[in-house]
Length: 139
Image 1: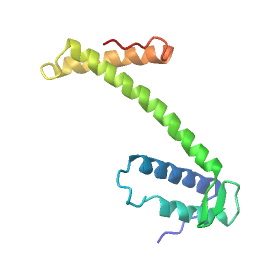
Image 2: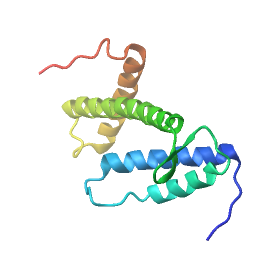
Image 3: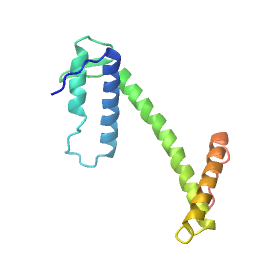
């Protein structure tokens, strides 16, 4: 067992992190009968926080839980992360696709990597400058 001393802000941050863990686990776990490994930690953190009755902790029939403020903050962080990773993944895939049109990565891996990096930078700059305005897909 560990005993640590936390400020209220630090404890709040840990509860936000636990909420992120719960959200990610719930969105990626396929076994509906499995228990989320972050919930016990979140319960302990919320119980510790409830001693001082902060506005960001709520009480329900089972005990202390993260309040709406925590849930909204964690959801916003996840939305921001999803936006960033979406664009990064899109740029990577587009650059890889375009590079494969010109160079076989199995035959010339170094040339392919150089072209891929060049195209990634070009596409990333285009996406940053224009977002969806100039993005088109052709079949």
